[in-house]
Amino acid sequence: MSTQFRNLDFDTAQPLDQWPAEAIQTVIDRGSLSDWRALAQTIRRNPWGPAARTAETVAGWDEHYGVDALMIGVIRHAREDIALAGRAEYAARIRSWRTQSKMTLRQFARAAGTSPSRLSDYENAKVAPTTDVLARLSHVAYGARTTRSAKRGGHR
Image (cartoon, rainbow, N blue to C red; front, side):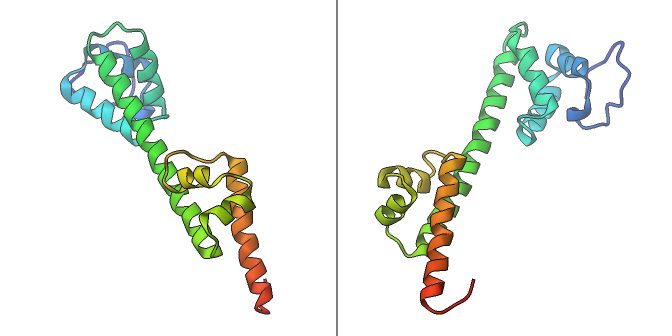
């Protein structure tokens, strides 16, 4: 870090998520491009972490021409990336449950109490299911496996 910290006593070798709020504020206020990059990297790694929350608060004051918009954009994009990755993970899991259950999209949706179009949205990561819907989908998937196993004479 090239930023000079006045009246702050902390170890600058610590990860930025462990820095005091005043230090993050100083980086936004008087930091260099390399300082802002380091803060942006920390935000991308942990978009809801202490450094990101502090940067969000400081940038919300709208006192730092250009830097505020930059930090808000980094935070927004990092959080969106996490949400998209989460939806993709749920989509793969739901599709796997349906294919393993040997049901069509329409059959699986009906059994779970949702519409085929909504189930398709879940499987294509367009939207994320609520925890209630996720539980119903899981119940249908595991219930279908148990039923098939019982019909074959298997034990579960």
